[in-house]
Length: 113
Length: 114
Image (cartoon, rainbow over all chains, first blue to last red; front, side, top):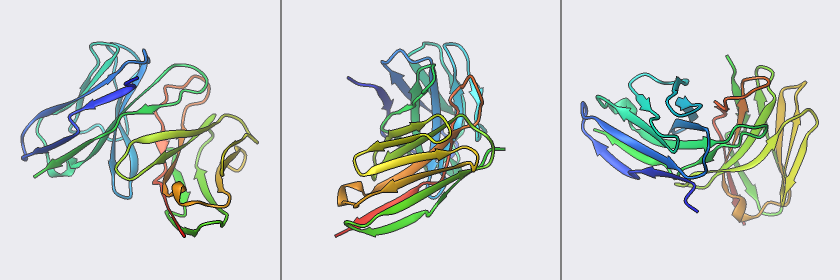
């Protein structure tokens, strides 16, 4: 009963390095999302996807790219990490329908030095 | 632009007391969600409120929605330590068909003390 799985759980990067965060869901959900959570800021949407092969920008997309090549996976990339991208990143998924409840992964804690 | 404001942002309660967390939002919406987050953990869905006057209850928590006032409340009855967590409200900015890109409030950090 995995739900939404994020890898890695922790990562430390140096400024300018690149990395990819992986989100996998086993609930056959159509929609997937990437958020960042910063102290006192709540969650802010970075990018989201309403289906395989589609992506869209959220509230804070700059500095990030995403891909959804398979329905169950949603990748978040940082091409050139900056200290401002130090944050906790959450992936979520949801099914189409009236309720559209989002189910969240455990998060990835990223530090950029 | 949809804005979601929660208050208070910090709440220290004694066990056994009642209190209410407020969530105001700036534009009309069909859906409002409440989530709970324990320290260092992920977010867990508590309630989905879909219509004006909707009320949902689970244990010591009760959520309500007034779409005319653009206000949702999360009422805590006879608080216990296990309710200590951060509570978020989130609003779906799209009417009708939703793509689920929620706007979250900043969260209310609740601490229940004996």
